[in-house]
Amino acid sequence: MYLDTSVAAKLYFDEPESQWISKILAGTIPELCSSELVIVELQSVAGRKLREKFLTSRQSRDAIGSFMEDDRKGVWHLYPVTRETLVSAGKLIERLSGSVGIRALDAIHLATCIEYSLYPIFTTDKVMLSAAKELKIELLQ
Image 1 (cartoon, helix red, strand yellow):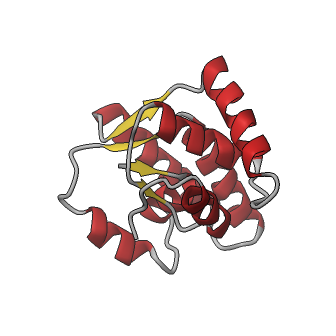
Image 2 (spheres, one colour):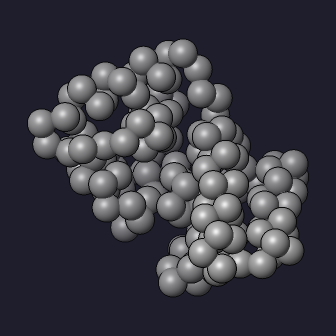
């Protein structure tokens, strides 16, 4: 199973779907899979939540520290962003350009999922859901 940042963020930040996602993932898989991209994207989520006053500096540090600790413990298996992944992501953007306006980072997530056959993909992002459906990628819903 592949988790994009929309799901990973809900594991470390208190968001409306956090409890639902934690229940779905509880005890179902030994490790969580994503792209290394999730490292910087979670920092970006923390920064946005801090700027918008949804988190204190301490809560932001604690959330990122919790993710990094889980990664260190092997809870996460993060796949590298390689040149091949980036080329594949570019091809996905081109392929979907007539139907789904997918962003670059989302395309990297999809390319990683496809490259390593990490199905199903688990996302709460509407654009990612549309792109995955268009590509006929199995979804966890």
